[in-house]
Image (cartoon, rainbow over all chains, first blue to last red; front, side, top):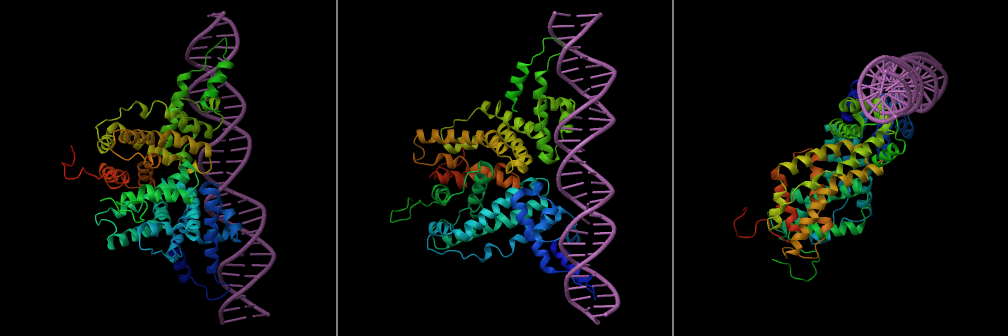
Length: 218
Length: 218
DNA sequence: GCTATCCGAAACTTGGAAGTTCCGTATATG
DNA sequence: CATATACGGAACTTCCAAGTTTCGGATAGC
């Protein structure tokens, strides 16, 4: 049962008398679920924790979601709304400028938060395909989408070749950042991101690290 | 308690009379643990399954490892012995040839097996740093080490620049393969690996996919 | 062959979390 | 104000796997 289903169900059986189900509470529970998930991981997370965090009773949670799995699935799916979409994408005139321009507080914080969520979800990724899809869609895709946009713009302005595999290149940084954070458990510092851009991504699309004056190598 | 500790303990308290502890059984249990882990994941895995698979009793497992966590930690740590080290590394004279040469049955199978183990471990990676280290060391590092060797050879023969960030580049394929398999759950086909080599890795070190104008694949 | 020890199997205890039920209270409708 | 419903909280049941104990049988040393 997804959140859409829940809404539908409420609309269907809306009571004519008495107290109505509070829609705001849904979001509070989803937010609490994401919080607890990122702090303790899926296995460590209990419904009691989520309920307490949301200022709700466990029964209230189960009145809206059939199981812990569906709650988490829904919480992750709802992540992709009101997201990075709002972030303004830099347009500096060069691909490197755009990529480096993405390294700043609001974007960084979002990434850090999502990495924790991803770490918390890790346990379920292999056993719950739905969840893996939702996680990919809500956590990695938004970032990859931005990268694709930046790359496409670079193609359009003739900065990089048109036959670049944009899909593949857009996944370089999400993949390597996730690896570094989740498996190596090393910090994803600004320096690391710069190194990634200059040492892998730009070369991969045929650009040198420093755009400054120096003639690019044909 | 690691396997080393166990061995030590056995050596210390070796009985002068009666039946001795069978050392071969240790390895059978560790192998069974890896098997079950890769099939069901850490959470789905029970000690009973491992014991049954190893043809042992649960008590026998607990006689040697204090807990499920330590068993898994030890099993993963013991993975890195008798491993890819034995695989012969190709030396084709070009970096691309070497990289493509790594795509063949023994290496592919090993990678596939390890990806399943990694997927099974995923749940514990964030909560158990020891385990994350062991997994990194046993699963990703061997592959990265080979990549570093191939890159270093390419530097030595003057094929690529000496200031390449070998450490970083050696992690491109492990990271992106893991992402594709675990999160996207798409197959890591030979085509994908070739695309990765030609579309990312070679450009990243300043090489074109196919030595320009010449015959593509020898 | 005697004995100390390990073995596999299975019964058992324990603990924790999922999911359910109940109750007194709050609140919107009418 | 009356009623129907959702609420928070807490007690409750159920289930599952970790970890323990016990047992008869096997096996290597003496």
